[in-house]
Image (cartoon, rainbow, N blue to C red; front, top):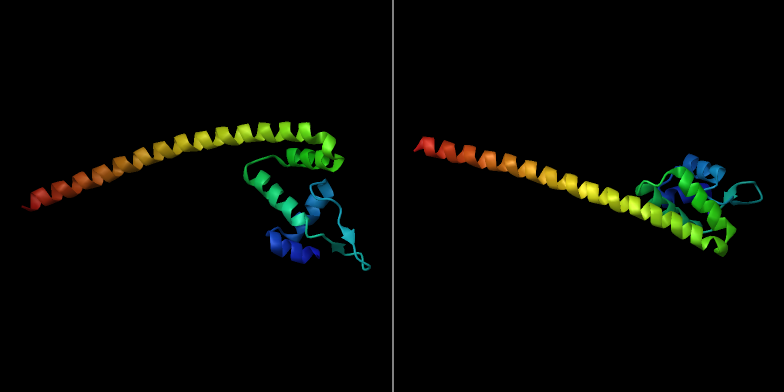
Length: 128
């Protein structure tokens, strides 16, 4: 698949795909007779995984490290596992922090809702 189709299917820009290839996040693409990049469909799964790592806040340098370890083969399973476990721990802490913040927001919203109800009750009482 050509770079334009890959961009369309992944939601990444052509520029981002080239950048990812340049820094080692994506393996170098095969080239057609005209020198244009020609990607195997299997790259879609890898890009989806990279997108998940990015979405969860993994720094690009760690993603590049993971990609380099992946290229080295099965012997790097322990290092890749450790990298992902450390990242998972950070994500879990972030989720916990977000849940705490959500609770604060819910409490504040309920405070305002209660104040609105009390204001409505006072209006109705005064109208009688």
